[in-house]
Image 1 (cartoon, rainbow, N blue to C red):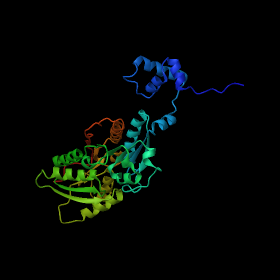
Image 2: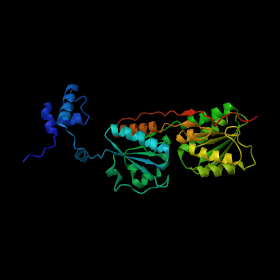
Image 3: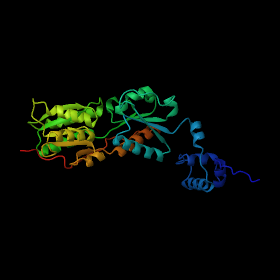
Length: 338
């Protein structure tokens, strides 16, 4: 009767490479630099390949007290932006041998039930959007190595904060519209209590105030197309200020609601009213006319967040600096009517 084949062990690799088991552990754990030579490391890797050796990660992680699992906490799963954040974060994590569990705060923002019996025992670290920060307390994620995305650096819960340069995005929108000649603005503002939207509103107001003769009204709205439609109609029915020639939206989805509201009133974009958004999701190019918007690189955002968390886990100082954003000018903006 033929003997069942046995799985090669680290001892087999050590014997084949002519090194100690400790050297094999260092090389296959990617901790060999400065301890063994490059020639020895390559000999170990080649022996492992020849033998078909695969480390028992479950046993290794149990021994080291690590799960190599990261929790990504986001407000929701239905937005293209946060899908991009996950893609960027998961891609980098996989390259470093980590898995990513995606967890949405069920109500978009606010507390959430613990998805694990004990988050500190089941996870190595947490990457969280500021809009889902309240969920961290419920899942005890604030007791783990934590990096915050889109969060106030001065009051962040995390060991590091990674931000897009959203203030510059608002400045780019304001400068573009002012250069076209617009002076009367409506800001369709997301009614979400979040640092990122507060910064956008403040940056927009500050930059518009530098030009004499400008007016700015703010219309809070839920983050839905129908909510934006209703908020726009209500704002346009307010007679105590000049009608806006430009509507600045906190999100591309809100801009779609603005398009519907304007069309119902027989107003054309951009002939009668210019419209801008933020995110540059696929919807922006699907609207007619295509939407002028601020492009946020969601995948790079997730990747930079994961870079920062890996640095925290390894005891290194994360890279500083905000991620640049880009104004993409399309057909939804034009000079106002004379």
